Amino acid sequence: MPTNRKRPAAASEASRTGKRGKVRCRQRQGKGSKKRTVREQLLVEFAAVAKLEPGRGTSRGRAGRRARLLRSLLAIARDLRRKDAAAACSLLIYSEALEPEGLESPEAVAVEAVAARRRLLNRGGRKLWDQGRISGQELLEVLPNASARCLCLLQRLVSLASGRKHGEPSPELAAMALATAAAVLRSDPEGSCAICLEAWSPTARLLVPSCGHTLHVDCFWAMIAGPCSQAMRGLCRTCRRPSIWSPLARSNLRCTLTSAASAAAARCQEAGEAMGPGDFAALCVQFGSEIGDRPSDLWNELKQDLARRSIRGFGCVSSLLSLIDEAEAQAADGIAPEDL
Ligand SMILES: [Zn+2]
Ligand SMILES: [Zn+2]
Picture 1 (spheres, protein in one colour):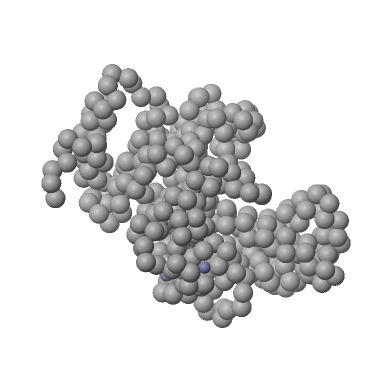
Picture 2 (picture 1 turned 180 degrees about the vertical axis):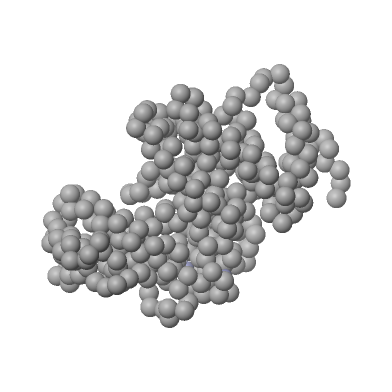
């Protein structure tokens, strides 16, 4: 491989080998005398850690650098007076994508990140949050060659950070989806979806599980909502490895799943085929085993979504909501869908 000392890629090359000091020095030289803001520094460091692939180079160095980054992000995100708090908080949310396997994303970081986001939203409102947080476009600029799995996770996490649960994807999320599809096409140009067998297209909406066996998002939803032996739930249908989702990515999947389920319930009600609480409980158990989620978390999210639809004019769902409430009231200490 020819030397790349004079190319801009030299910085990331150095970062892969863990030479942090050199990276900083070269980056400063590249930007001339202009000093980076804290926001820019955090984003650059986030990208540098993302580029240190797990299993390559010094994994201990990578883990240490990631831990230092998380500590900095936590300290800044907790301090509401800091103008970079939203940027730090959003990067904290995105930090799950630094562990594409999803095995080392602690629940505690997810809890802190969500709490910090709520505090910032309460204090400054949605507009200030959106102005301050790191956007999907900014992530794509600093991570032009990220893996498909990393981009898929980032797409989920940006969706969560932006708070968009319903409607058409925003331009930001649409750009993330295109970047994920581009990364899949880069790494697997001849590949296709294991469910529908369709070859990848640049505009496909794709989901990349931890094992890497990519599916169309719609094929994934159809697969996990469909019949299947209980033993295969939560496993990739191609390689039988477990699908692992980090806590915040999982909560985004939960939102999407429950939104789809309540939309289906509304359609069923309108068609005169009522779904009872038992049907919903079974769905929660099924989805829970597919994405590694607690059925009760899915249940609570689903109830909120049903209530939202009722408020928006899906009056027919109200009767179903009262059925669920009845079932819940009968349980000794709240409903446990797995018991139904
Ligand atoms: Zn498909
Ligand atoms: Zn697989």
